[in-house]
Length: 507
Image (cartoon, rainbow, N blue to C red; front, side):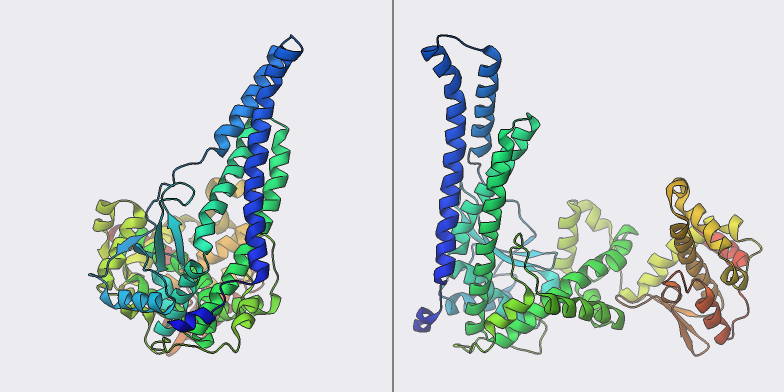
């Protein structure tokens, strides 16, 4: 497109910073090589001009010089696949979008496109030495595609092509390799106790601050290009959703996915994350995080990306020059074909064991409560049977002694070093688990949907045992009151543990 000539490929400031980065890169290798050969020259000069040789000094100088030379020696870039390799034949809808945006930004298609498991999208040049002989690689995160609309994903992909357009990925390998060489030099000199380490630490900090400042400017330039190709609206919304999704996915993976995988089950990853993103509890956490990010806007000199607020302000009002915005209603994950097979492949990739991944049984999220959480909870509660005998929920709510005792038993060998407040908190959570099983014994229905508080529903009432015991001040009192309001007589905790022990072997 002729309109691409209107797109800024970088400001004078960015160009100046890039020149400075290259100068610092040359400066580093000049400094390193100068020091290395200078150190090795010392014993030679002493022998030739002073006609003597201090063996210890000679060894130190030669060793330090050799260490520096070994550290700065360019390494071949061994590329390890970051995820599942996607092809145009198996993913025609996604590649049609990528091709369209490549044409809109006047860029060649990436040589390889990978589906990755985290909230991320990236382009890079990998392979070869110092960028020479490298190839273009693009990565798209499955959770990103679940969190974004098709229009927002288009904006993200256009942003990544913006890095190609601005030449960022050509400069990137040189910066990355130089940074790695500085780190190696510092570490190797540190292992040998050399004072020269301080010189390279100082130089490395300066190099990182300058190159990370360049990276932030490059992000803004890529944002501007994406806004002109797809529109500022989809890019702005995509940036916000991606920020919120990054926090949400960590919670989702830890709270929902890992327990299922650890129990031998493989739930649908994208569908579960979609539910998580829409859950009231998860939305509250994500909205708070997004608000904080937009209000703070603090810049860390070691950040590679500008603050979200700055990125949004940077593209405000920029008109789209091409009608490439795409569907704003359809979820981007619908661009993928055979999603179950892709999810199984991602799990296998993460496990680095195809056979182990094949042993995981598919499971729907509605079955996770019965097959994953209940067996685990029964096993935990069964272990508490000796402690809970003779106790009721009312007695536990009125006195924290039981919570403390349960906490000590649950902490095991770590109890001796733990603070009493921590043990009480742990014990309270364990007792909330006991009450959850007790309410199910009373006919209540368990719900462990992704993103929501664990809840049990019965007698026209929904109770969230773990939410009601979130703070030490609440303890078990609020949970006891909720059970009474639901018409449940005082729960016998010992009997609940006994029934859990009977059921645990069959789980």
